[in-house]
Picture 1 (spheres, rainbow, N blue to C red):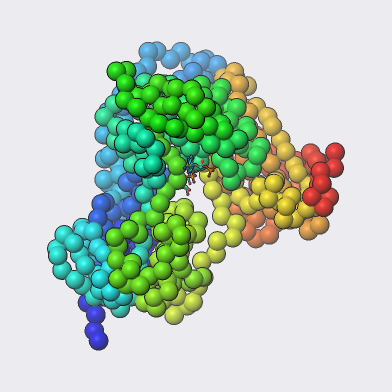
Picture 2 (picture 1 turned 90 degrees about the vertical axis):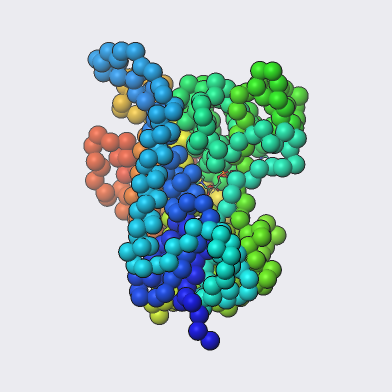
Amino acid sequence: MTYDYDLFVIGGGSGGVRAGRMVAGLGNRVGIAEEFRYGGTCVIRGCVPKKLLVYASSFAENFEDATGFGWKVGDTSFDWAKLIANKDLEISRLEGLYRKGLENVNADIFDTRAVLESPHEVRLLAEDRVVTAEKILIAVGGTPHRQTELPGHEYCITSDEAFDLKQLPERIVIAGGGYVAVEFAGVFAGLGVDTTIVYRGPEILRHFDMDMRQHLHQEMQKKGVRVICDETFSKVEKTDDGLAVSLAGGEVLAADQVMLALGRVPLTRQLGMTKAGVELDWSGHIVVDEYSRTNVENIWAVGDVSNRVPLTPVAIHEAMCFMETEFNDNPTMPDHDIIATAVFSQPEIGTVGMTEDEAVEMVGNLNIFKAVFRPMKHTLSGRDEKTVMKLIVDSDSDKVIGAHVLGPDAGEMAQLMAIPMKMGATKADFDRTMAVHPTAAEELVTMYQPSYSYADGVRQD
Ligand code: NDP
């Protein structure tokens, strides 16, 4: 049997485009289909435009901080429409680069929704035809959870719409306490919007280190964000004045926009999973083995559609491993151990490895090194904002197993800390590393005395 393609990729986001480009670059016949825009969530309505909005929103504080350094800043004003137009230009440029990368290696690019008809057949809906492929990669990602059981959910936006609002709201209420909620809260508050976050648990950012969570909560409040924990929405209604959010505890919050930032769901519905016999888990994610292969021998899945770590660099890494394994005769399993991550909240969080609570449970004997200080810039700006740095060290092996930073450029630090930690660096390695002075990051190599310790999981004070 001959097929139209050696590989057909469904989904033109970070994982799909990378796999398609690399596999076609090796001389294989590759087809790729995307129903929305090439680049996927990260480029079109995720990480990239989000970071541009974070930059935009940080100027208000920069103007204020400048006065402590002798500057007199005149009248300032902000134009949301201009920001969105400029953001759109940039993402269109990036989308073009993604397409060009595929064109350069002669991949066939389809602008259509594609669904599986059988293990080797893909229907291209816009063209109403079926193509065949020896191997198929599913990389369709996910979409925001819209909580359709919530009365009034239809009045709410998600991150998808937040990037293209016609005008900046005066008041916004955001549901959720994860990445998207805290990042957008920072953006909106920085742009002068009256911002409230409503989170169902006791403290925002559940999977992060408690020190980072608590300090971020405090810093966000200092910037005027109202953070309500242990609360949920019970309904959202239209009013003469905009929208009203009723909370389970009885309080009613007035808003112009209400945003749901409640996680994402995989886009596996009506994708032909049953026709092709691809197994899904309880949450609709595609079940894969350690090489990203589904239960169907010639079908693989990478990125957010598989239930692993839903981050862009992880999808790209999984795609590269798939290419190596299936098209370069070099079986390579994705390595999901020690993944650094950043939250572009204001201030930012950068984190690598275990939280203190995880380490207490899994390791037990620990030294914790912690520093809380005012960043140098704020000695003159006068801003009341703290940086927090924390190292978690396995006291038996001396290995640094967790590193957490809250403060300016924390994401950049996380990227660099991840390298020694991946190599198994010890606290002694950190200590014998010369400091770069004056930086905030030097604190990571100058915390000589533990702030406190644990023995068998019990804190020793
Ligand atoms: P997250 O999983 O980070 O957070 C979802 C939030 O919604 C959590 O606080 C969760 O609470 C809460 N939640 C979920 N379901 C409900 C519900 N039914 N009722 C009330 N609250 C609920 O998802 P996000 O939407 O913030 O982001 C989606 C993904 O995108 C992230 O997982 C991340 O992988 C990626 N992302 C990464 C970024 C980065 O790298 N900087 C930036 C933005 C997104 P609880 O914690 O209690 O479960």
